Image 1: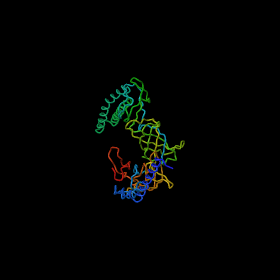
Image 2: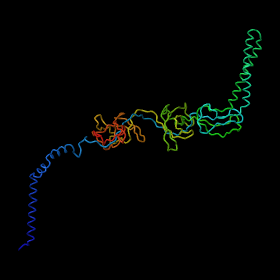
Image 3: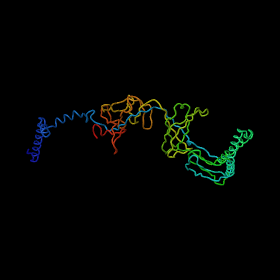
Image 4: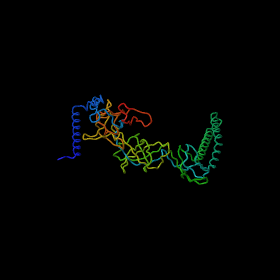
Length: 398
């Protein structure tokens, strides 16, 4: 049987391809390919060996710096937090009233104006009192001179002791009349008793005032006192000069810092609460008497260490943080959580104030990896500071 020519050609081509493939495999098995590879890269074998020694799995243990943020642990104390409602009043506040009856002749009251102590705010007609004052001023020197003259005459027996006594009594009477006239005029003048801000008034010149009528109010708002009460169980958690924060109960405003200025001497028998006063500086004038504030204070307690909340890690053994050891490597520090706030955690354990801890990226840290020094500072321009340093430039990098 004669085979077709095309089939013979295909069979020959297949045998040739198989022989070539076999020769290539035998050549690779004899080390020919590696020799060519080594010739093209003579140092490749050693580099590969070094790479394998340095990077089992990609990196040598302890040879890389994870991208983390560092923070400094700070000294703190664990105290009892109290959140209550308080009402503000001025440091000094008074309702000014008329001491005499009469017609108003002068009003110098501008609501909201700052006035000084002794400044005249209102006058009542004092014409009659001024006449009495002038009469007393005219008679007083004469009576005083007569009393002195009769005293000398008694010594020379030119006048009797009875006449000298009458002259002296007349002198003392006119002296009292002079003082009474001056006092009557002062009663018809309303003055500011201290520096403060004047309130509203409806009095105008020509109005008739009676003794005891309220003229206006005066408030010393250089400082504001916030009064609040705490339960009797928390009475021992508040002491003088303890820090206090107050924020408008409606919210939306910044908190103001003050200190406890006064503590009542007894618990209210009805409400079983203790009255506390805290004073706040009011240089800006934004705090107004009568406002309601949300008051917060924390009592002084046992010493602790403050770290960022994100620094706390957990496993089966409990809570811990990663801190930077003396050699710059990460080391695990077991801690016990004592108190939490919004962003800060107070802890105790294998950590001291001043230790550098990982505040962000702790899940990337393993024992022995290098960590940046949180005490390093850089100037402006987005660079890290003492309390926040990115580890991306650690291990000698800038």
